[in-house]
Length: 288
Image (cartoon, rainbow, N blue to C red):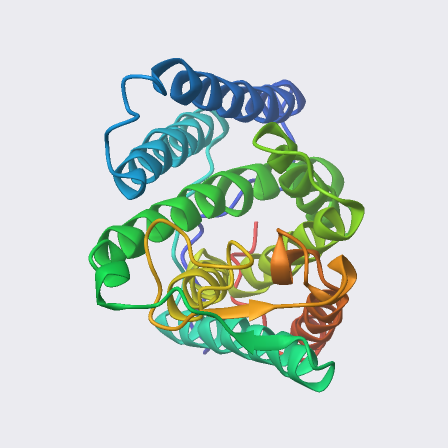
């Protein structure tokens, strides 16, 4: 007899409060994001002498720590376990997916002739790298706990997976407008990333797979290769400084790889592969 995973998922029948909770959770995330941005701007003069990496890390702690709180409170109100991790093996698969997708996007940049060596990586740029690693981990954990740990299961309970997973991916993408204006390709790539992480969470039954995929992509892009911002490196530093040149669609704009068509292609390949996995592989998600 095959052992079944523990029943930690959402109930089969939506409750009366599920739709208000879903809308309220999205509104709370939006309000919290705008609030965190406004808080940083309000204290910007007094933080002018502070190291930029420290300011950025504190912002990540406040904003994405808040996302975890929203997920935990919402999960308690809706009987959903937002921090259910799933299996270690699914985390390994997620890591390979994130790493593979980023390398495919970089390969596309090499073929297009747009990937060049920058001049920002040096010993001084590595001082804040551990802080950056912690901040990126907090960011990824907060986003995945909220969007794939709580909002997506709640939406699936209401509308079914076929609608809920892409819908939450779109919400995930649009919420990034609270921080800065983004071009259409960047928004598309964010939505595709959300779809990829959503499929990983849904099929694996936990956050380990989307967490690992999301973290592998962000950490390598920012802290390993220094691709964000473009050109140059961010306040946390990077082990290597690679820049992208050419048009914005080739990654040569300020958003770099995030607004490139090679990233779009890589995410489509990765999402298609994960979708096939959901169709052919045995799901680990709990049965309601």
